[in-house]
Amino acid sequence: MLFVFTNSFSSNAQQKILAKFVVTDASSNGIDITPEALENGQYIVFYTGDDEDVINMSNYWEKVDSQSYGPMYATKTDEIKESDDTYKADIFNFKWRYINTYDSKKGTASVTLTKVYKPQGVTFIIKIIPENLDILIYKGYMEGTIDFSNY
Image (tube, rainbow, N blue to C red; front, side, top):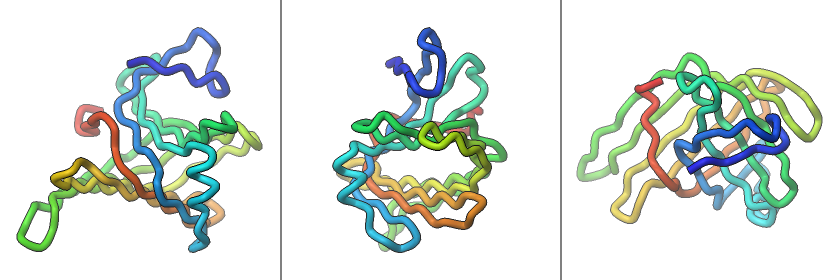
């Protein structure tokens, strides 16, 4: 599946979506922003562009066509094995070099993405901490699959 980010790239640049994480719960510095996230169709997407060896991430708000996007660096992964008390989970820690389409600010954030494998499907929790030390936490479910070990 191909997807064009009209705000972030030229109109003939296409990206290959690797995974889409639909946000169903959102908070910013402990304040619930779920209604705003749901109303605006927020999701997190991982994709490759012209350089298929680099994974990019976008925090996209579909209704207002706004996003923060950019490449991932320094990815580290951990795995939690399934047990009687816990589901299997993959934890990805990485740096994200982003730019905002809504205010043109750029920066590098620390990100932790946890994918939890439940019988009904894959859920996620993503924690994003940019330079200003805001704490953004998004939860929801995943569409598609992604394996960061190839990148």
